[in-house]
Length: 162
Figure: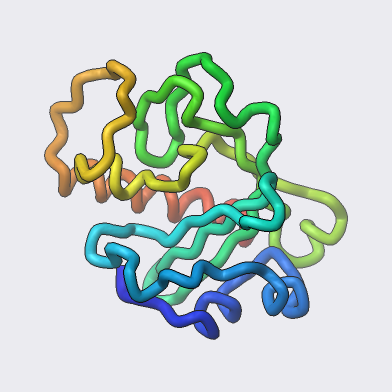
């Protein structure tokens, strides 16, 4: 992923108002992020533990998505699989729900999927982070796993934007 600036990140959000995007907390360590290893930028809001953000590129355009998480599900001990990176973790995967973009979102419609709670899918796929949970044995290469992650991510963003 190419490095993004704070204004680019704020302008990318598709499922919140411009005012909400202006007020959300953007990470201060953007220059220190491992951009070359990221398929998307994901972070938790330090002021609101149930809020997460995800920003990615699809066909040259940047899209940001506001996510909500059930705080009770964070750290739950059951083994789950992330729908984006297909990583199995004990207590590290949560159902994240995003309001749909536009009128559908204003009417309360949303989409959800199971995602790594720390939003570090790119690093798990590349072996930069380990889950500590024995999972299934992957026969795909790192490049193939990253391609699958991007495809799953693009599908989720398309559902939010639809």
